[in-house]
Amino acid sequence: MRIAVTLLFAATLIVVGLLVRPQPATAPVTPAQPHALLPIYERVCTQCHGAAGEGNSELRSPSIAGQPEWYLEKQLEKFRLGHRGSDPRDITGQQMRAIALTLTDGEADEATRTISRFESLPTKATMEADPGRGRQIYEEQCIDCHRYNGSGEKVFGSSPLTGFQDWYLAAQIDKFRLGIRGYHPEDEKGSQMRHLLSYLDEGDAEDLAAYIAHLARRYPPDTQRR
Image 1 (cartoon, helix red, strand yellow):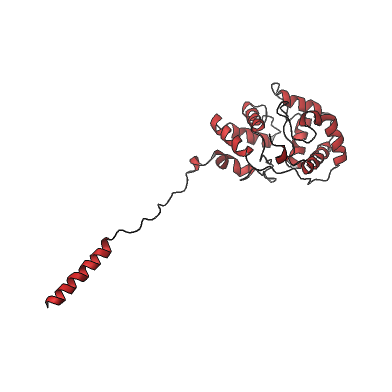
Image 2 (image 1 turned 60 degrees about the vertical axis):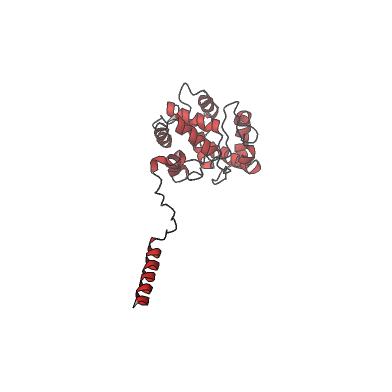
């Protein structure tokens, strides 16, 4: 009887010991990051411009990946001031202006830094056009400011060209040609572009974009980073 009691007592101690033994720590469950705390690019820009700045042809949003900070900052400033996106014919520009107006200065800076670090996507020819005619226009009107390789020039405030889609380039050339961009009296560079391109005929914009696609193949934009 005494032996049985002793064995029962020992078994009880073993069971209790197993119950109170410290259990290995489990990794805490991290709640989903609140939308308001996401990086500003992910929160505001990806829906139109894509996760890596590649753009979206269906939304008519340009590829902006790898564009230099100085250029991105200037364009955001123009949208915020109404130098771009205020013409009622510019639907996509109006959409971009509405987004730009929601950004604080700090958020705008963060977004431009993020975009400038993405890998650029060279312009590709996707339209039926005449790059020979485009070359003639480029060398007459564009090369002095946008350089021989289409990389742009910070000193002149001229944008890099070889990282945009050809359809976007053609659309912007037409906007300048028709006065939908470059209309604001305080937009000096835009006014210059409007003047230079105002003489172009319908269809010239696609030819010019086709030649820029040729420059992108010859001088990939990531090799022209500043």
